[in-house]
Image (cartoon, rainbow, N blue to C red; front, top):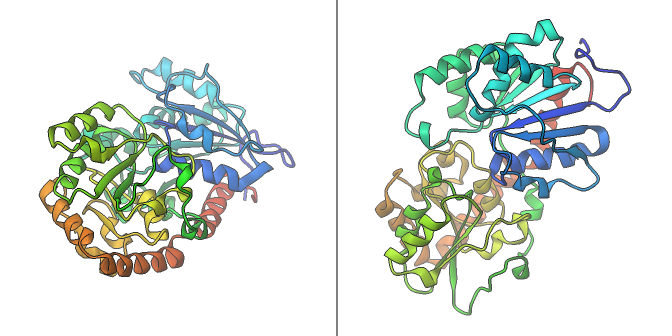
Length: 384
């Protein structure tokens, strides 16, 4: 096992994280939790292709040594040799480069082009899914670019079987360089009773909540979820926890379906374990997902899940829940699943118990963290 270029034995490794966005979505939450789990053993530097989207910063423990430079080269733009060289120069002085999704692919290409000449540290790429511009099919030009850029990566980490297949068959990555690591959480924390005061919203007497945790982005199709919930009885409200550019579109959909009084957007939450148990049903409406962390969180909180059949969601949930994974893009199908769950509290409890048991068995954070620690350590040529 060799030591990464520039690494100094006995000195705390420095990790550069290059994100497509660092808002508090699934991959960003996972990254923050991993940083916290590594504790003071590592130093972290975080940059985002969307510099204004840094909501997950609040999830990083204050004891963690982390910085967020505002002078890092832009991660997006035309990939000219000069621009890629500028990015590559900014990659020096670290022990490991971690890149995330398409928004950081120019960093991967800069590393591929200049790693040898500049003695750059190893790079591990994390691919968690696609935005709305590739939700219904990957772009050929991007696939070629990914294939070329990723050929210089030490490892490509994916959370789902679908992404694993794409990495192997579409991006032609060697089997030995692709690691599928299922997203994991502190399942015990999500099994605890919720804390109603953790939300700036009170659950009224007799209310039932369909809830979701999601960035308010077009790919999440949240107006479709509003339409699905509109068909439920009046005691059922929709609570969408998250922030993003689609807020006004969601509110407009609520108004159009005459349920503005039953749709609540309390903003992003820093600790989902404190509030997710307030939901009676967890729901997604996304056009594209792979292995959504929020579904695992809902399972650990013993909730039934109604969601479209995208990514690995169907195989993630417990067997009794699979009947409520619906046709993608269909408000009618999602409404039918929600209606059946809303009408039967015993059914919700049985499905929730099965989901919780599966989450504890297969999706606990400790197992995920052990895998990441091994992959990062192997890439750097040192134990972590």
